[in-house]
Each structure stands twice: as structure tokens, then as C-alpha cells.
Length: 232
Image (tube, rainbow, N blue to C red; front, side, top):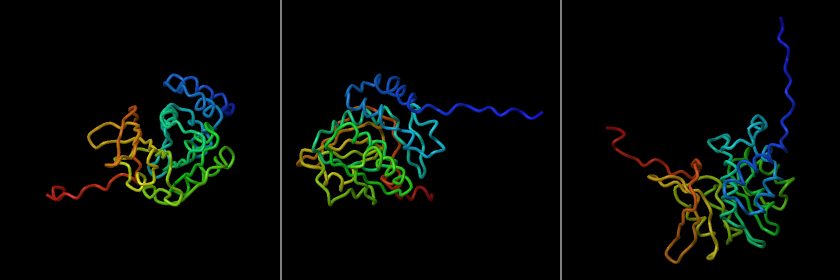
């Protein structure tokens, strides 16, 4: 006997978004009302490939092509809270990917001048589409993540949406003297933490704010060191 086909109702993304904010974001020490409002509005399901939309509001990072991920919602929210963008600031989002973090930044604070940098064209296509509707003032750039966007520097705030071992020198150089870089940093012998990095006369000063299990950005991961031991 042929089994009946069970049809499930379509997922209510709006309801799922509100549950995400109430169950994941607000309990995670996110108390900036601008972030809460932005996350209630920005559709995270449009920041993932269509085949993964039913998982868009899961409490986890979501895998994207080429080793990239969509950072889990609570980490994205807390990064923005640490960054605390203010009206009139020039902002660069590196590894903007599918556009969720950069769209949240735009939604939480009017009057930002935001550049989004992405080297992966298929991911950027998703991000551009999201921004076209929800953050049309964001300017997208294609190019190596480590190079930044020197023509528009200096930046008051640089956000890196993915973990790095160290901040690329070009990004440090593009940060304003009184600006800050907010990024997950994953030391070789440590745990990944979202940090604030600020330029100093001697280089940079780094302050870890909270631990965050964010994968390394493949493009910014250092190449494996050559060792004769591997051939012993």
C-alpha cells in the first residue's frame, strides 16, 4: 500500500526569529536595545543557502561552502555589543560572508558608513542580496580579506567575522589611531576569544572580552610551517 505523503506546514521564520532573541540573545548578557531590535528584524534565514533555511535560528554556527560558517547568533550579538558602533563612524566588516553581521550593524545604528569586504563571490552574492533589502547603504568590495579596503581608510571600527591567529597588518594600518578592531582571536596554544584590538605607538594592545568557539577563517589561517620532521 502506498504510504500517504505527510505535508508539514512551512516554518514560521518570524516566530522563530523572536524565539531566538528571547531564548538565545537576551539571556546571553546582550542588553543593548539596538541589537535586540536589529535581531528581531533582520531575517537570518536569508543569510544561508536555501537548503539550510530551516536551521537558520539554531543556537549554533552554520556551515557554509569553502570552510566558512555563519557565526552563531549569540556570538554575533555580543561582538556588536563589544564593538558599540556610534553614529557617523566609518566601519569595515572583513569576511562579510552572507551579510548577516554587516546587516545587523547597519540595522542597529543609523548613520554608519559601512564597507563589507568579501573574497568569496557566491557568499557575497547572498550578502549583497540581503543588504539590498535591509541595508542598502552598505558598500560591498571584492578582494583578499587580509588587504582590507585601504582606499576608504581609516576606519573607526573594523569587525572580522571569523577567527584569526593574529590581526593582519594591513587591517591594523587601516584602523584609526583612536579606533578599534573587534575579532575572535584563536592563539595556537589557547582558546578563541572575541577581543578588542587597538593601535598603539608600539603596535597594538589586545584585550580579550569573552570566549567564543568561532572557527578560523581559512583564508587568514597561517600556512603550515615547513618541517624536516614531516619527512623523517
